[in-house]
Image (tube, rainbow, N blue to C red):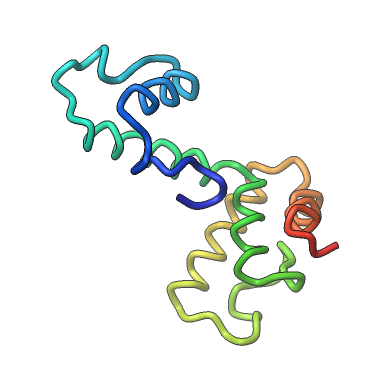
Length: 120
């Protein structure tokens, strides 16, 4: 998984239920005893990915890993060199839009992500 999320493929069903209960507040296989372990893994992955989309620090860490020290929330995807492809530009611009929607201070998040990566 990305951005420090657990490796759900290596976790047992009990650990997955524990993780989901801590994150969401209930144990999926207790509410639905017929749920397969694969369905439980998919549920956990989906929740973690959705949560990361709204976590400003996860958004910044993602782009610091891809771009490095040159990452800046005000820079448009098309302006990075070497150029991103159209899909990456769309992903980057969507992430920056979300970053500005959810972060109290997007610039502080960017600096923190760089510090976490050992870049400053």
